[in-house]
Image (cartoon, rainbow, N blue to C red; front, side):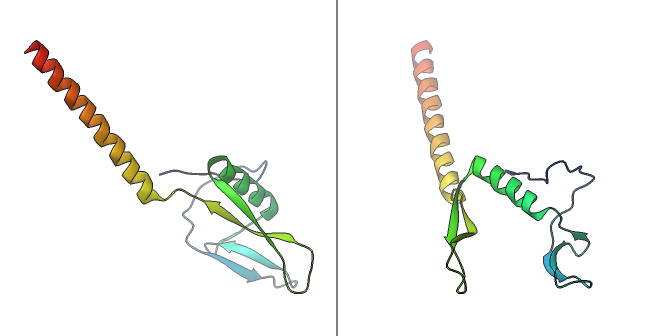
Length: 118
């Protein structure tokens, strides 16, 4: 399986867990909301982590910035990202075609060599 790893700058890893849930939580002390992972961990350094994630993804895939805004603002901003990933079915079909071509070449060469030497 392919993997793209993104971590907050200068962070130190202690373990890994499967991401089972991500949710917004309200702070009991303020109006702020924060992201909670697996109902156990706060997501910290969000902007730094987003930068790292987008940077790593664009190294492997084409990424489009989605530009737009909201009704109450006229200034355009990046409101999202579109990550263009290869269609796995097409990749598998192409790999199968390459393998069949290679097997045909091997079979042809084997048949030719056995005919000459046989």
